[in-house]
Amino acid sequence: MSLTPQLVQPETLDVGRDGAERRIAYILQPATEETKPTLVWLGGYRSDMSGTKAVEIERHARETGCACLRLDYSGHGASGGAFREGTISRWLEESLAVIDHAVRGPMILIGSSMGAWIALRAVQTLRARGDGQRIQGLVLIAPAPDFTVDLIEPNLTDAERASLAERGYFEEPTPYGPDANVFTSALIEDGRANVVLSGMIETGCPIHILQGMADPDVPFAHALKLMEHLPADDVVMTLIGDGDHRLSRPEDIERILAAIDGLTTA
Image 1 (tube, rainbow, N blue to C red):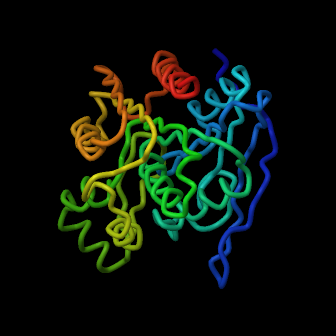
Image 2 (spheres, rainbow, N blue to C red; image 1 turned 60 degrees about the vertical axis):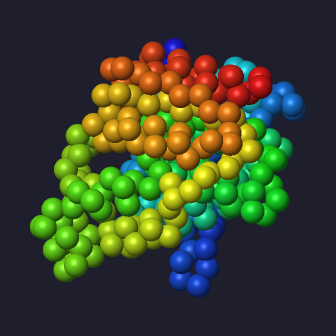
């Protein structure tokens, strides 16, 4: 298995207007088989399209004839815009804009952590405008829908609440890099407007959820809660006993690729 990112210069798309413009970077690998779907990678909070899972999914797409679309949200990776201005609504707008611009035909949305939330909101938006039939399936990896509402807000300390009120953000150390995670008031308030775990979620497509039971960031109970809100869909869940939040080990990647293959041939 090759874990070396392909050195491809991203294309860009300008999204937003009236002072909210930002330049979004993306890489589209065309399909070599016309009947195959586009694999759309939607990354997590503070991740980018050069990560292990994204690169391996693109490699797999190339080997199986699928197209693959990777993108960076504003404030992430190669895209412009300020990270602290990011919200679920803003990153959803960018994802849909790039999808509309770059993808033709059926697609499989692959959302990791926060990207799973964006994927579910993207499906809701596409279905509302009559494009839901383009979604051939969803692969949700360590899904974190509604994480600001369910996982952050209930656990805020007094100091964090004070920081939100006084500075408009709070910081939290992370084991994934030297810089602390920054959570803004705007992100938390916007999260309430994008809640998906408030009723039945209908995607109209098969779904495969992969969740580590040793995930320190998103408890596996959260994935079980998501599954309860998907009673109308064909949902498969893979629980990985020793799996962490990233699910980037070679054996985890193989499980993710097998899940994609299951939806590609469905």
